[in-house]
Length: 327
Ligand SMILES: Nc1nc2c(c(=O)[nH]1)N[C@H]1C(S)=C(S)[C@@H](COP(=O)(O)O)O[C@H]1N2
Ligand SMILES: [Mo]
Image 1 (tube, rainbow, N blue to C red):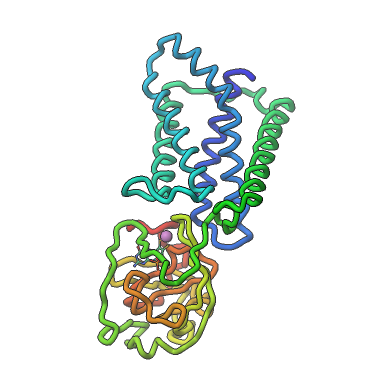
Image 2 (cartoon, rainbow, N blue to C red; image 1 turned 30 degrees about the vertical axis):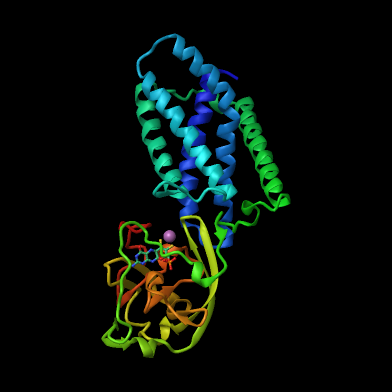
């Protein structure tokens, strides 16, 4: 394969890997599971292109061009991102020093994006009209088909070997089964709150709800699936949100935490959100949002606001928020 074609293939795969990687954080329902699969397949396409790229790199090294340090770092970043991705899939390595494997993977992925953009600015690989010719499209299709087959082989092997990575959810997350094993996970920099269950009130519209009133025994089995790479299915109990608010008072509702963390939901979904005070029959531990947290079935963990302080309804559209939390 020609050098230019390999470079273009790598560029496209890197861009697709970044787009599907962001997508994999947003996916909450099974119908979006293809995004996570696509992320794996484009990653494997990068692996397949490696031998050709190695040839290009070794030629470049001989020529002593500028930007060599950048090329070397870019190669190292891509390799690190791939290796940490494989570690996530296999489920054998949870953390690297103080960082979780997912933090390492995302950090390296973002660094790869930055390095790719700089690399492109220094050594542009312009597209040509012939890139869209039939045989090049066939080559791309062949590459993706090969990557797809590799993906199937890896998943099949993990499954047969009953490796931890064999029973991942469609999001790629690994299971945690016991309620007491659920980690206390913050999105970025929140601190675990230690609230007094007897004194805590949740302001909902113009009403103040005491925790014992929210502890109404309405049960919901739902799966908390953190983008950190784990999930847990539990029986939560509390009260359905539509019983606490006037669903005609606006278009969307904002669930806010005592920490300032918040997420906005369409008001029509109030009947599929719960304010819960218990998990598996026991009061929620502080780390898991006690005395009251949100349960948002079908949405990833970052929607499950912990230490809820208020729910407000207004007329803004529900998409009026950063797609992922900023704190
Ligand atoms: N107030 C607040 N709520 C939060 C978060 C946070 O950082 N602050 N993190 C969210 C994320 S990313 C996840 S995965 C779940 C984790 O819930 P857990 O700590 O019970 O595992 O809480 C969500 N609720
Ligand atoms: Mo999370």
